[in-house]
Length: 631
Image (cartoon, rainbow, N blue to C red):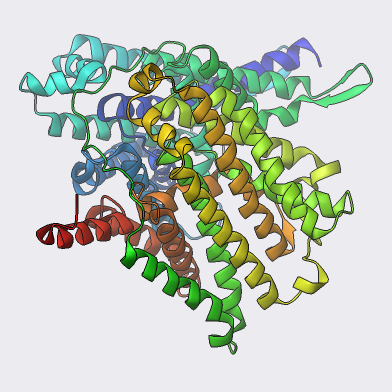
């Protein structure tokens, strides 16, 4: 560690902050006006670098400087197409269904890039005129990175002029504060939203194009950048462009300092600060959300004037529903005998059962409790690792490990929930994401205990469950019992109090319900049942890896719940089975299964905005109305 090294790392942080700001500014702008949590924003960033690469390959030595603005323009036009064909149709749908639609776009765009450019990384040329380096305190620093340091403030200044010196900018700022009032004043919100989305997408495309000389274009860039962009937007304040700039600087410089510190000996304890870069930004977001939930430069969001339709109360199953459930259970019991010639059917059925329990545990806090979680896979993974470590490190039998895993998941959810239940809406969701990433980083880097990136192997069931059929019946019994218990919770006084706190927290508090305590308990219960699913998953696969509690797994859980329908108890089960089965079938049928799956999800979102189970539930209720059966 020396001052020259610190200076270079801080400059590296400034260069990275510029690119991160461009992406985050577009994401913040889109959310501020449209209130859409645009999961596909990282895809626009990825498209930007691929388009720039394609243009540079076909132009002369000035190609790079032409390719960068053209790539931004192309991505902006792509944003217009996406907004007009997909998002415009679902602006009045619940926010989480908009998230589901943008997730589907991620899958489609990723495979489109795979088809156009192939799976290999594509390294672009250096920027013409900026191939050298500048000596700073005896160290060489790339000239192009100095250029990037300047780009960020220039774009910030241009956006400030746009939003403060033009009528359009005034409308955008007004819509950020109160879009319903802007519509009431006669402003055409449709085209305002389209223009804002195009500008936000173009900023992401510009950020991606400018990265071409610094890193190769690859298909993982979308998910790698979107997490950091969400952090910057939340830390800076939703809808605040200056806040995004400050947050990008803060996050990038903290990571730069961690790299500079490297390995530090503190009281004979070696601490690798360089490894903390994986979690530093999420730790910053967690602290900011706990201390100042609306961000450093944001403002508390005004309550919307247009409310969604009131949800009907959840009712006990009637005779028809019980009959269908009994038939499904009998079919599951007979599955191994019916499919004795197809061993894979039993393996797939185990995966479907585990996915159903995982989705049901997430629905428990999302639907009845009204708490949206973007990090539920943390408790699934804690349950899996808890069970695996109980067998591998402690030498406990599998039967005991199946109890230890859920307890570890419940304890993790209890700790995280204490902080999270103090927030609501998207802020709560982002805090769950922050804690989940912290847990993931700990598991990923704790080589001595968790096996690090290699995970743990040799996590097999007890001898009496060694056969797949035997383990299937155990999984079926545990999952059915867990689903029954979750249902019993919802129809108990605890469940009614939980739904009261969701629908009207002030009235619930007035009649003596401790809403936060109820939500905290619900968080722990959901984490425990997710841990059950994780423990079953670990023994079914024989191994466990950090991907089990990564962001991708949490997104899968969200997709399952929303695909099935959040307003119904059977929705998460239907969504989990549909999503997992579609993944399996499509992955075995085509190399571009992500795009096919995304297209199917988009169609389902547009046709069934209440989810698959919610749609058929509405049809059933409509069928019963003429006979007076629904009350």
